[in-house]
Image (cartoon, rainbow, N blue to C red):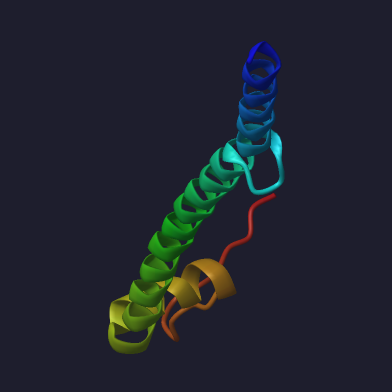
Length: 88
């Protein structure tokens, strides 16, 4: 009877070890779950950046003042009646 109890105990220990530490075990589950959460956070950040870019694109397409500001700041455009001075 004693040897059967030891055998059952060893089987239980083996099954617990397998459940926790194997590739499909609890440790791997927790690792994958954390990776999924990190990827979701990254996706959320990228989604917010995309929304901002879409708003910027719509502003550049529809708002003349934004287009003019972009042309002046980024492309160094000036109006016909303006003079451009470059100071070093």
